[in-house]
Image (cartoon, rainbow, N blue to C red):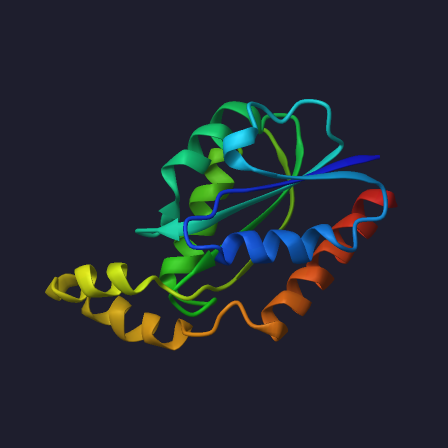
Length: 164
């Protein structure tokens, strides 16, 4: 079985989670960033990671998913500033599922990722984002060791599903 862990990361958070997911995969595997990935062909299992931006899959990642997911076995993972059970995170995962129409979604994982200071500054000036800014303040230091252990366990569970 050949697996791909592909990710798009703006601040390094999603890259850290991708690396944690990559580690326990026992078979032939590749870890690639989105910029070096043209399509998803030739893989039996794909872990696809992205940052959440405005309750959605980041546009660059969304484009590849939307055009390449059909017929694939995919596990989605994401990072976001808000809490993992927040409306922001859940809406982005739902958006990811919709982009993967025709794919076999094996599972989803999300965790907090520290929001870049410049983003916090810019967004905090907009009253409509006040609740998000308050939530995102708790993202400092994430993904942390616990988040990465959970990502590794998620990967193990997905691999076990596929191997059955």
